[in-house]
Amino acid sequence: MLRKESSTDMLAGKPWVSLILFGLPIMLGNLFQQFYNLIDSAVVGRFVGEDALAAVGASYSVTNVFIAVAIGGGMGCGVIISQYLGAGRISAMKTAARTAMLTFLAVSLTLGILGFFLSRRILVWMDTPANVLSAASVYLQIYFCGLPFLFMYNIQSAIFNALGDSRTPLLLLIFSSVLNVILDVWFVISLYLGVAGVAIATLIAQGISAVISLILLTRKIRFLRIPEEDTGPSSVFSGKILASMGRVALPSILQQSIVSIGMLLVQAVINGFGSSVLAGYTAAMRIQSVCIVPLLALGNAVSTFTAQNMGAGRPDRIRRGYRSCYLILLALCLAIFILLRLNAGGLISLFLDSSHDRTALDTGVSCTLFLSWFYLFMGLKAITDGVLRGAGDAAAFTLANLANLAIRTAAAWLFAPVLGAAAVWYSIPMGWAVNYLISGLRYLTGKWSRRDLI
Image (cartoon, rainbow, N blue to C red):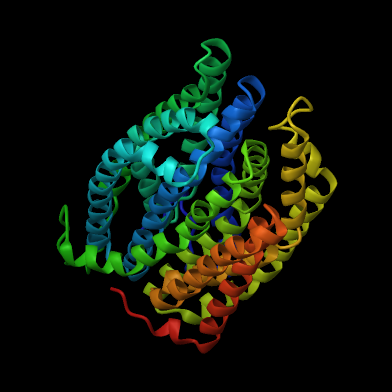
């Protein structure tokens, strides 16, 4: 079985220690990923203008859907890979890793081609303001050109995580983030490429990281030691393993996509209030995307922890790990709450300075302050879904996340005529709370511990 210094042992020691040691690099890596997303918005908002920031914001709800597909697919495949690792079946684990990469390469190429040609139509369907439509369309087309790089990097990171190695993806993300920031500044401030500049910078940074990641992962998989008792064949592709992955990957994609699909479905609500409100909302969503990073990282760590211990037949250890997450969540959410209550205006001002329309600033601050009260719901949803996903209990967390999506979308559309744009962010914690209630009730039944994926 794989036991190297770069990997965290999920099967031994105190569960909370394993979760923190494994989850911390995931959290830092995701923060760096969000960091260069923030830089994209800050550079565009301050050096190009409010309309440019609104154009990136209009594209953001679309790009987030595809990012969620890549991350969710990787997490779903990672569950199967982790369970094979926990069971000591290294040959099957290698086949699973290769199958995942080949499958999502094909998926990303298909989606990239379709997205490139449909970018403008998607934005028109979303009722994107006319003054930002052209810039948003250019941004999306460049983004779709780099979609295979995005998918392959996220799938490869998920495989590293499934092997217990969350440090290598962290180092790659640091490299990618720094490179992206340098290219942002160069393309936008020096070369005056505007919205297209930040899209090109992201494409280049992700492309280089994806290639380096592929080289490192290929070496890691090739040199994994296969135990003598493991007599199973190792191949390039397995339809049977792909089917098992699909049972977890598809619901995981749905789970990861809920926030993004919800944003996409309610984007027309925000767009209808004009580009100033859209710019403020975009800034607030950038702040939210950073705030939920540690919560999602903990949920992802719980998923890998659960999968490996399910493979090893240790559900009691999973329960201990899950209980320990509640204290970790309380500490994280308290820190987020204090930060946002003390400095919401300053954070929004990173994207919108005093020269912008006051409506944009007020929208961003109002949304950020409201959500500061409710991140605990998001965290509880993340860790509970993590257990269900890691155990392969697909139906339960699929139902929970569908309920989340339905409530958020319905509330935004129904209450917007009465409450205005605020209805969009009022609906967010409603969805989180219902999601946690459904997933939590399923966890209490204990039926997730009897799932068999491998």
